[in-house]
Length: 102
Image (cartoon, rainbow, N blue to C red; front, side, top):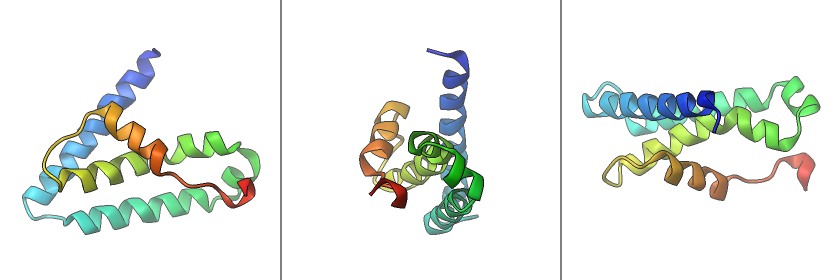
């Protein structure tokens, strides 16, 4: 596996842990974190370059961090930290199709 991929996996888990700490300290709610992640995903998907120039698999790659962190946020509420592989699999299972794929 590419070392950069491993570094990104660690980074996603670190950000998820920071988000969990923000919730635990009462600085943000899970809903606020989820809303922020959904909003940034929509901004990214609204960029013309992304829609016109990228294959759907590449679009999925661009928004993967937001989807991963949103799922980590939601799953943490259920009682615990999840591993990267489990969360990444859930991202793949829960993603929908883009309008140009229908």
